[in-house]
Length: 178
Image 1: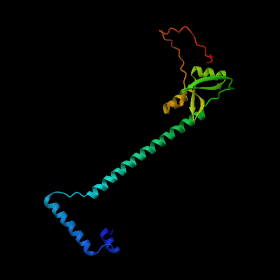
Image 2 (image 1 turned 30 degrees about the vertical axis):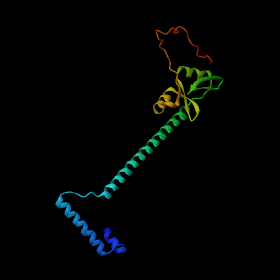
Image 3 (image 1 turned 90 degrees about the horizontal axis):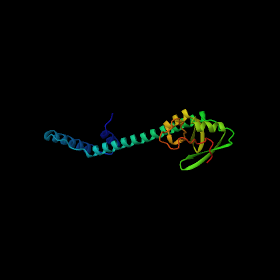
């Protein structure tokens, strides 16, 4: 491989005397370094190494951000696929079922059988892209593992009654409209 000095000579950018002087200065510097036992600091090389280190660090950060975005996109695709494959029908839609989503009260119309499943906790309401879907509880648990914010409403079947509850004797009807 041809050295850089030879390439400059062939291109006519430098002449032989300048190359010879540069080589002499370089050899003198090495000789002084050997005598004194110290090494000269090459600021240009250090600056280049620092720039290279910063570029490598920035590239790692960008790769980490890109990987995180790809992972999040894959999780959203998995959730969408689970909802699409396992969503349940709402029935004829003659009964209004009210639930809270964030700070708002939302309403979906379901059949009596679907309402019974919602109240019992067998079906769960999931909000995906602004649309409320009904999925089985097992699927909702898998969705909650990936992103708990998408699961809107989970009714827990409460078989236990607190002994200190003064209202334990009073049953709340399942078809109570509010």
